[in-house]
Image (cartoon, rainbow over all chains, first blue to last red):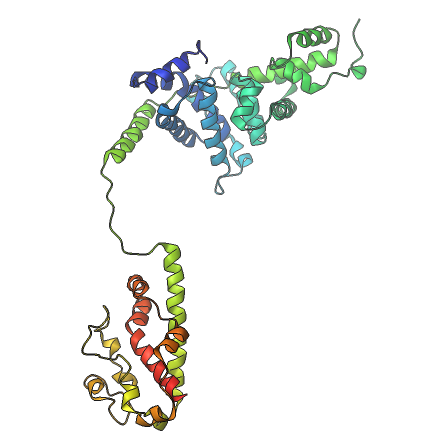
Length: 190
Length: 241
């Protein structure tokens, strides 16, 4: 029981009938989940759909919820399974085809174009492109570990693989990512 | 003293686990100390950490203002669906597997009957004429029993298919059909027993016919509508064979 986990507390309150707790969970996690799904799918509209679908499944499962793990681990597992299903749809574009600049989530919409921002944007595009070229499981494992802060055990549960496999996936992803980035960027000199 | 990078044996995967905080505290401390004197490990650790920083720095798009409302609409729609009374349209159709099985059986029967009809028409007109007692057996236009559901249809009338029949059949048949009479056939061949005929043609039970009547294609209906006629013709053909 994760007694100190605020999300677990909210989920238990929601299970008991407090709909405001569901709103709070959505507020806390929808943004992070959207960012995660956008990076995995590179299709903003689909990512939004899967955020909805993930929370819809949380809603449906509220009466069966048991606080056996962090709420976020459960939520990301739902979202990851949805994302993997989406990535394996036959009509989906080759991920490499979606790495063109026009497909990237535009930073310009949220940031003004100063020189520093232009530089950051280019750096971000390079990182996005390198991330997008990783095999999907490496991409998922690296993001969950390095960005979402999940332990290897949590990532293993999310991806339904062993911890040893997660360790290898994360490492290979890191090596590939750093190899594809400008050395100056990787070493923080850019 | 700096360590020779060429001689460093620390696996890179362990450095990655170090960055992820997955190593035991003691081993993590050892590696951190090692990296202060090993340029290769120091560079890898720095690059791995930097990669995580870069990923985390990727911009996040604000959650669309209507996303929660769209989610709520889906939740409400599901709730309304669950609350709605379940409307079950009564159906007499058999389940698909049963329908498939029955369909194949009906068509198999139809094929056998069609072959028998062909045999019947291949016979000479003289052979087709037989004793009235034989020919009266087919349940064609039986007045005493109601026809099956689709029976009173033009397809049941065999008149167009029997243009050259010289004589009317039995009186009760002649009222509706000019089927041929063949009194001498009964004398030449014993009347097949109903049991034998049933076994040979494996008639479809009434329950299955009722289901088969729900088959959706016109062809299916024709087969069912003409089933009795075909059976009669087969029996006649057998009597002459």
